Image (cartoon, rainbow, N blue to C red; front, side, top):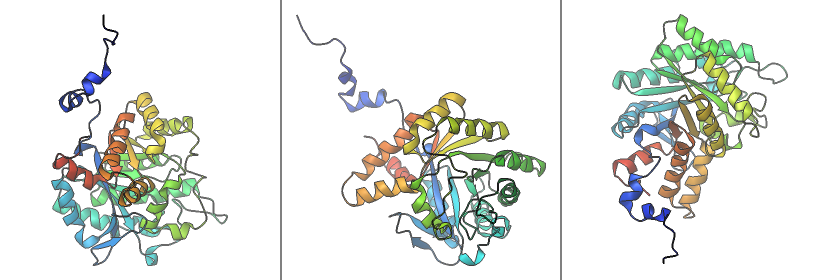
Length: 335
């Protein structure tokens, strides 16, 4: 009589065909959003030392870049401006200039590719001399309600330029409601809001701040008075609940990998579209380790992104999006 078990889970792991048939989560191009850093002027590309392999993209070549991403079936891009120091002010007035960098880029993309997805960042930190996401008082404290007025102007400027989805990333109280109300009153009823509902005061953001040029202004200051304490998850759920009640169409958790538990809790409780942002620090860790031969780049990138899907993310903002889409197109992405 055999003493071997009748239940053998390894049977289904034996061959590739059965592994594929029972795979619970699959990564596709539909899951990817490519963040892009855009700068003005005639230059084409600029390297970012803290993010090896990622480049700032010149305004003059952004449409060409979008054409390539579209050919890879990546549904959308998230635009982030690299604002010259000469345009930065204490009050961030350039953030709602209709002839500013982001409105110009949005109009260019919309003219070339009318149906391509454009997501714009709504926050003041790229435009302020102090590097904070909002307006500050004499003590350096970020003022909530005064900032809302500026964010509303910025959101309307982006919507007017043709952005189909705006993404407030500032974490001010009440900003989703204020922006949604303004969009409705001005006829932008179909402009979607991707709320950075759960944005933690994370150390993983530092390469991003270097990329957009806000690190210098921020200096030794931090954003703990408005971004969430990394130790908290119940607070994150309250933020999501409020943003949904105020009119958010999609909510985001940022960063991604250190907060997979939060992604899962949000998806399970609210059952709404949830995006994850694999932020600059997450990218730089994987890129640097693979560049040094310590990790298999393709294997760890796919494993990390599938982890977001497994946790409940419907889409992922990742600096690996273009590269992963090329793997998928070449059918070289399966484990």
